[in-house]
Length: 98
Image 1: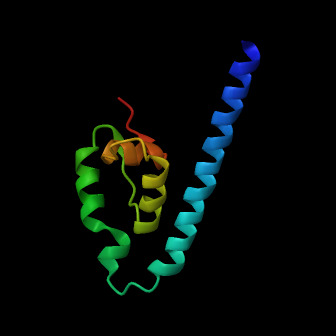
Image 2: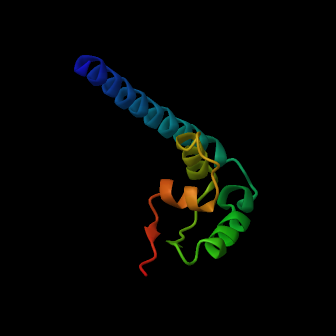
């Protein structure tokens, strides 16, 4: 039984590493393409950042997230609803201290 547990853990860790690499590659590909967007709000997502900053002001110190970083975070958080709190957590934003 311990051997099965070990194999299962190794598979999970390996799968997580693969997802991380794939999501990072997705962000890199996005960056090569997003430079062609002439519309600054499409790149910088000011509405999302403003709304999330407001919604999370008591729990997170929000920093602006751009289109490509959000794409990577969405990839990493495929099993989450991806609300503002999830985005902040996956982006490793700083928590507000009580």
